[in-house]
Length: 131
Length: 100
Image 1 (cartoon, each protein chain N blue to C red):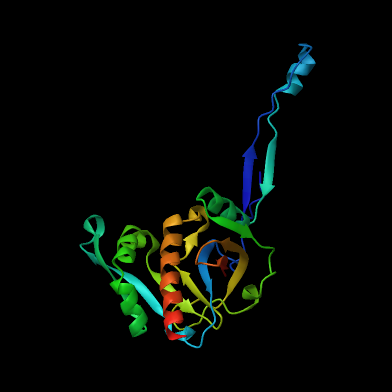
Image 2 (cartoon, chains in turn green, blue):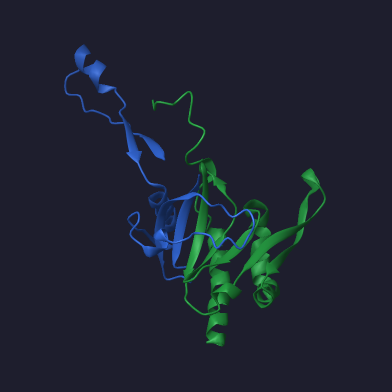
């Protein structure tokens, strides 16, 4: 049996993990790929249903993602579980992530990977067009 | 993270005296220490995604900022738990971070 500390220290790493899907891309316009997706819901508690998703962020990029019906369809299936999806640009990479996951629920989510992959296609296409 | 694996070993018993019977029915518990990104890479392979876990701290991405801080509520203190390299997809890496 593992030794469980009865008085754990109130600091240190918590049992929450973040899964970042990273696209390695370097362009002058990396900062333009800033967006966040949130669900639009109707009702409360048990009757809460998702009716649509809304992308906010840099205008052009958010519009491109909002216009992709396939992506919206994929998001409708997972967004209630994932909570929100953020596209966070860095200097030489772009990170796509959802919300923090507890250690117990940390498993590879294939649906989330497909969504991140589709967003990555849009980013690559936009970089090619600009370049 | 610790993953406990119970493994039952059946001993072939030539003699059936009482002493052998007492020692033969022990189920050893094997404790495997698997890092989170290794576990994630294994799960990816089950989903037909070619992922290879990299040694901790071996890639420059692990030594840079993980968040642009453009969004509110972006965490400041996180611990890098490893990077998984993806092949044949548009996504290049999957990184795992633990909240502090």
